[in-house]
Length: 137
Image 1 (cartoon, one colour):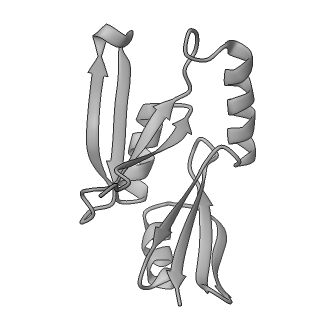
Image 2 (tube, rainbow, N blue to C red):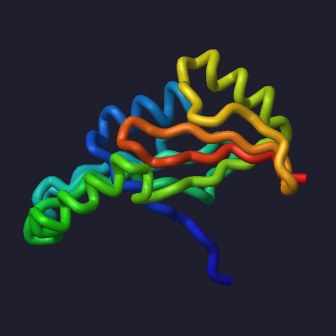
Image 3 (cartoon, rainbow, N blue to C red):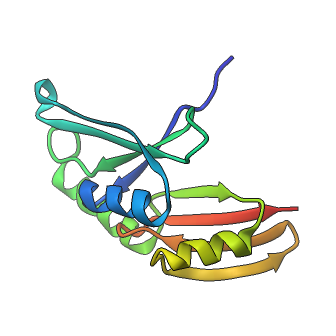
């Protein structure tokens, strides 16, 4: 069987992203490894507590030779607009999760709102990525 193990979000600063996702969102570190043989490439991933088989890789925007300067800048521009990645989180109680996250200092773009498919809200991480929080019907 094929399963999803990791998804990726581009981030401006891996340390800032790590702090945001662990301290404000409440996730835990899945991996934090630096590989000297690959130019000190850092594999940093986090995931929801209680869901150990899923991780989000918090990937620094690379430079050459992986990505030329023009492409890296385009990625950064898309990130600033919130169009470089989205993660969808589910919860049994969107309003309670919203209050909990606000209590940790997280600022939401959209407060919980009734929609045809459930209760939905969203926030952005420090790099501009949209994160949606959904209580499905």
